[in-house]
Amino acid sequence: MAISQRKAKTKLTGGKYKPWRKKKLNELGSLPVLTKIENRRIKKVRVLGGNLKFKTLFEDIANVYDPKTKKHIKAKIISVVDNPANRNYIRRNIITKGTIIETDKGKAKVTNRPGQDVGIQAVLQ
Image (cartoon, rainbow, N blue to C red; front, side, top):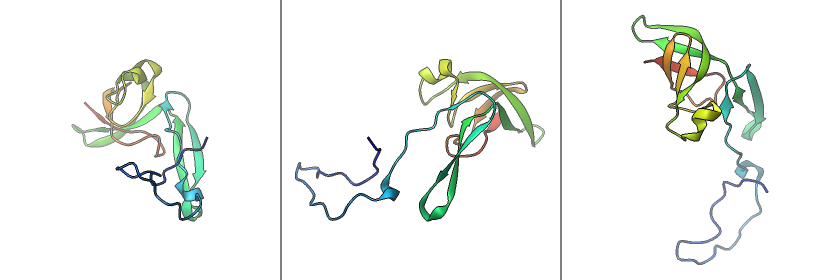
């Protein structure tokens, strides 16, 4: 069954809205992309207007910002230390925004949304 991002069929009171048109392709949703630690793999998705979105399925390198030296460094991701989105993501090594990752440069916090961007951006802690 397809995931829809349409308006609800029922009102808050329990009444029903009269359907005024068919389903449209641009109302189609998708499952969340759970980015894991492995060699880089990216999925291209065509969206409205013929544009492309890139979803990071797997990534093993993070672009880490060091606030002391004010420079960006490429760092190898070792594992997930903490994930505020879901505690089960820690043992599955799933990376989302806000995740604390262990890199070869130290612990870093992910600042972007890897499921909707190419690559992983992070800040050293």
